[in-house]
Length: 223
Image (cartoon, rainbow, N blue to C red; front, side, top):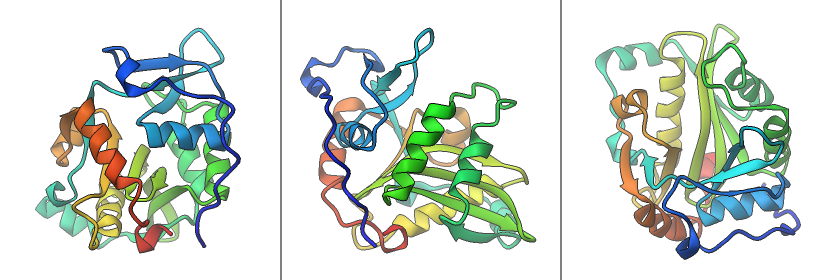
């Protein structure tokens, strides 16, 4: 079933030509479904802002993206994939909870973020890609899908290579006749993500790609 468009947000974000030369663009508003979708379509995403109960809205000056043709698949990862069963959207809450584990370093997913993304999932905009092994959730990721955009939010693993296998499966889901225009957004480029093929592009380039991507039909595996 197609995703359900929620009521429009009562908030508005500043246009991109007024954004500061900084990753943090704004603070405030809410995490209602309409606000979140407006933000992602604009090139923003929320993360808790220290010292306040309001969300911060971020758009990295240098954005991390994974070109669908650029995923690096090692020989050992190919061997690992055979251990896992891939599922989509069968354990969204469990994936988010695992990503939110407070024992993880630099954890940022709080109860308000969890609730907001579960609401978006109920409307058909948030998806999880999961790697299962012997009936147990071994790893996975979740993110927001709008047309040809998949905005990756977080990933986790309980077994070696499980999150990498989930990412590989996501790339396959996005690889169709529109794959050249789809955007797999990772927010920032970390050393770990760089080892998988994530590259950096300027904010202006990301916004131009985003504008084209959100008008595309969603991939069949996520619609």
